[in-house]
Every structure is written in structure tokens, then in C-alpha cells.
Length: 599
Image (cartoon, rainbow, N blue to C red):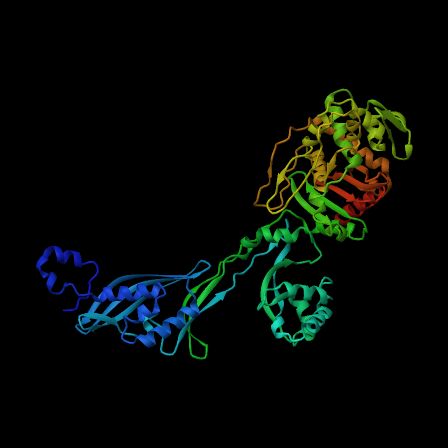
């Protein structure tokens, strides 16, 4: 007699009736055994072996191959869960199935296989429903992805910086294009208006580097740009289009150096997880019935510390500047980055605002003054010589244009930016005094900010007398980035080296926790920074309580200079850099425009 294994009760019957093994429980394969062999062969991709256990091998193999080809499982797991004997001529075996469709997609269902006798064994009675209970005759199975809903990247006030937007990728298949050069020229004529980097030559070079048989992606366009160019490119031979969704800047001109880096950092978080549907399809490819659905999981919005308003004001202030220019702004009370701005000239050189290293010039006198005050030998009111020139060792150090102020309070020497005063102060310090004080302001501290690379600067200890004197007014071997001087300004404002966070939920790490500067010393430095602004006069002095320090930093052969202004107003600290500007005056003008733009 053919056996139908009754899962769960077989062991009990064997214990009670051991002699019955040669009857109902003989040695012939059971229906469950054969069904299990069929399912195992199917799971292993052995469709021929699975079909051989059916009563219609040719039809079974054809459909199994069709379904596997359409669904493309990376793995199938099955488990026989029980069986029912209908009669000596029929049995039904139940099973669980888990089809692994890749990308963490699992299609699970319960099925049933009808078994019919075949001599002393069983065969699967073939029907499409063996693969799935709802699969009908002349049908197959398809998988349809459901795109996840991307979440935006928001600024500190909830305004979107990056948001999902429909894009259309333009692809060129050289094998189908005929005259590839002519098609490339037509594409360049239309798309060069969107991106000047797209030329006939760039397209031809891209095609040449594309593996044979593949298409070259010319560009991915925002939908509005695609619609504008569509009439000129849609019917070009060998050109096809693929639509999708991509996280893009809401304002394509905002934070052009920073936001692409941010997108790479947060894309997995905001993208969420796509869903999918498994459906039956008729012979024409139309959907018949939904077998399974896994809803997509929405992405999680990312909150940045940037202020879109402050970022826009910073960019408006520097975009008209011809030279490389950058502004970094920090909120001293929280240490959050508010703006990281560069103009197009800076963008061409990379991440100038965060990693560019330049001599800070007289802005570094903030650290020199602090080191002198901490040394206890001077106060802000100590009479200090400010001659037009001073000789330290073999080096003659002049003031800018050789101005001579005689003997004045230290705070006034700071305001007038007397190189001679601060060179002398530095020359009398220990070799590591400026290095240690700079670190108290965050310069030389290594920040690890998720997603971005930063450099604050470097102030190596100076054993050489002349080098130490030059360091005292921000020349020598002292280097700082706009980010580093913004950190310095923020420290002056709050008394705490800022954490410089960029993402609300992703803390920044620092390699050291700098020793705080004594409050009386900081109070004196703040008074001196205010006197700088009132001494400068002009529009900047008319703004409420702006404090800062100018900087003119020579570079190269000494005939060219960068211009700086680093300071703070209330709970806004910032650093402004204009390279090769000759003096700090352009940086002061940009600072004024920046602050008025956010007031």
C-alpha cells in the first residue's frame, strides 16, 4: 500500500503498533517524501529533476523555467507541513515556501501539492497551482517594485535643502546611433544649455570609455530641464530615456560644494526601503491578480544644523567676488554649523571653506594676544610700542605700509593691527606657547564630522626666534582654514571650543578637549575685538556689537596677500576669506554685506 505520511502522529503509531510497519507504514516512498523531493529540486533550480517527479514533465519544466526566469530568485526554501489522504488514488501535501528575491525581498506563501499514485510510489499531479495556489493556466508570475518614498534633508528651521525630484537619464547606445558623432553633436547642442560641461567631445570620450554593448549615460536631468530639451533630443537615433527619482538640492545654486557630499552621507537613511508586489500575468503580460505585497518603508528625514537663510546670505555676499572666497558660520551657544559657503571660483578648487589651508595673517593675533594675557605679563591696557618696523634676529618686520603708532595700549595695537607689537610679544614666548593657545581656540584640533572632511589648521611649536616672531602675526608656518578661524571666533564668543555639528542626530567627535581660556582673559580679548571694529569704522561699525579681527596674509613671493575677517555678532560666529585680495578691506566689505543679508 502507498504511504501518505501524517506529520506529527507517525512516531506515536510506531510506539503503539511496532508490527504495523510492513502495512500502512511500509518501505515505499510516501506522498510527503516525493512531494519533498519535488520541492527540494525546485528550490535547487533543478527544474528537470522536479519535473521528473510530476505526471506532466514537459509542461511542468516549461512553466517552472518560465517562472524562475521571470522572478529570478536567489534562493528558495520550502518545508512540508502536513498531508491529507483523500483516497488510495489521491493525497494532498501542504508546504510553506519562502522565495528570496534578492535585495532583502522575501515572498512567502503556503501551497498545496496534489499527489497521485504511480506504481509503488507517488507523482505530483501537475497544474500551475503547484507553484502557487492562485496561478492559473496560461499564466506566469511577475515581480513589480514599489519605490520607497524618499524623505527630505531639512535645515535647522525645517526648510528643505535636499528633496526627492523626478529625473530623466539620457542614454546613448552607440550600436544603435548610426552616426554617433552627429548624434553626440545634437545632444551637446541641446544639453549644453543645461550643463556647459556637456560637449560633443565629452560625449564622444564617454562613449569611447563605455564597454561594448552598453549605453553611455550622457546626463541625468531634472524633469523641468528634460521637458525643455525634449523636443530636440527625443527622436535622436540610439538615444533612450530612463525616469527615476533622485535626492537633489531644492536650490541648485545653494551649497554646491557641501550638499552633494551630504547627499552621499544620508542617502541610505532618507531613501527608505523599496517594497514589491508579486502578481500573476496573463499571456499578454497584463496583471491578473496580486499574490503578495510588501509595502515600502518611508525614509527618515535628516535635520541639518545649517540655516538656509544664513547660507543664502553668505553665498550672496561672496558669489560676485572674482577671487576664491569662502564663509563659514557657527552658532557659538550650540557649536552648530550654520553656513559653509563658497563662490564658484572656490568650488573649482575643492572644499576651500572646510579644508583649505592659508596663512591667517593678523586674525591670528587673537591667539597671540591671548597667549600674552595668559602669561600674565600684560593686560589689554599695557602700554606697548608699535614702531613702523622692528628687527628680531636677522629679520626686519614692518607694519603694513610702515605705519608707526608710537606707544599705545595693547588693545589699540591689536585694533591697529601692529605687526611689530605682536612679533615682539611672540618672540618672548616659549616655543609651544602659540601652539598651545591656538589649540585652546580649536586650531589644530582634529574634528570628525559625519560625511565631511575638515581641517582647522596647524601651528607647530617654533624653536626658532624669527619663526616664532612671524607666527605672532599669522605668517611664519601658521596655517588655518576658514572653518578653523570660524571655530576660533566661536570660541572667543562663548568660551567653549564648538563641537561643530552638521547633523542634529550625528554628533561630531574631537580628538582632544582643549583647556578652556580663563574668563577674564576672554573678556579682555572680546573688548579688543570690539575695538577693531570701531577703529575700522565704516558700515561694519554701524552694525550692533560686531567684534572681530582683520587679517592680511602674504603668500608666495610676498607680493600678494589674502584678506580675512573673523569675528562674531551675538550668537553668530564666522570667518570670511578672500584670496589674493591685496588687503583685508574686501573681506570687511563682504562681512558687512553678509551680516546685513541676515539681519
